Length: 508
Image (cartoon, rainbow, N blue to C red; front, side, top):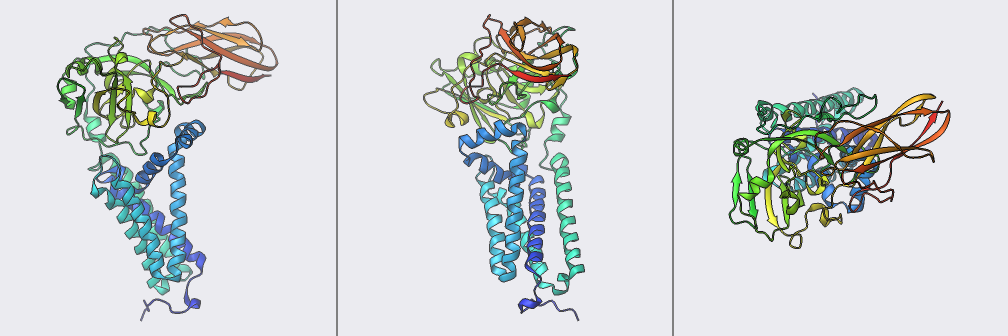
């Protein structure tokens, strides 16, 4: 008869390292179970996502900025990897504690579950039910350790392998199932998005002409593919917004509050425009910038229907996850093509880029103009309200700085004719000239690509007769108003980096 009793002596217990391994596997498989539970109804309630959101919200501004500057778009995956490591360590501690006293190990598992649950229920737009995925994760982890503890024969070498195999298989299966559930399950928005046929624009974008792309290897394309478009936001998991229940509310200092459905937007005049967006955290020469063809409705015309108070100098846009941005109303009503976008590069707006609707305001950095997963527009004043990044000591809205970047070459080249190329931008002013300097030589004017609007970046190129040795290439641009890009070096915070991009290369 098999003995299922708990061992009474230290000699009968598995070694501490085996308990630590059991705890690690229990915690990580539990985390996977929690991710699956969340994927079925509310992906943002997943333990990993909720805890990451809390860490971001609680981080000092200096830490947040350091993460973006150091890791760029990899900052969120690295944060999640760090949290996974922390959960793994906590699981190991739970296993070791359980070995000494079952209640101690259970307490560690419970604390992990409660931490995830508390993080989830405090997230905007999530209710008490958001605690369930984390509680499920904790129950699974505790159940694994209980199984390990109460089945003495399972703790020999073959039993440990069997336990690990089962727990790992469940965890891997849960991860795979959660990925499928996020795409096809009840909590998925992909089905709605993929069912949406992008309408033809009433006001099509002007075509830039055949010379918009200079066709140089290593040069960023004029239009950035959706999959390559930079993403910097505060959301660990992109909000899953049900397009049928989505509403856009316009309120605040207005004559009348208005509410719009997604169908209401589609019933308006649809405007298509090519617009370059840039993150204020983009360093000199950085890649947190991209150009896309957006489809949407006029922001100014929609706001006008709410009869804005002339004293309202700030438009606060809110995301479904609570993020806020503040745009000067003067820059919404000055004739620029500010849009509430529903399409991007001929496709429905990607989920990671704000489906079903986002703001696109040319000429301003994204932190004050490009709110994703849009759900509210509030007319107010800068004196009355500080949006998310302004609260964290970033500057008040300013026009995007004139900037230029060398894309190729970046490190080396062979002697002879070398094509140097890159992009330059000064949204809503345009680029009128780009110049390249080699070492301490003169500034030489570059060839520019075709553009149809001042709201996009512009490619440039020049053929350089490169001699062997070490060289420094420096680029500068002139905007459409005739102002030359400043060489004064400034950091990204508080109002965007300035300075001239240069690369050092070795010519063989």
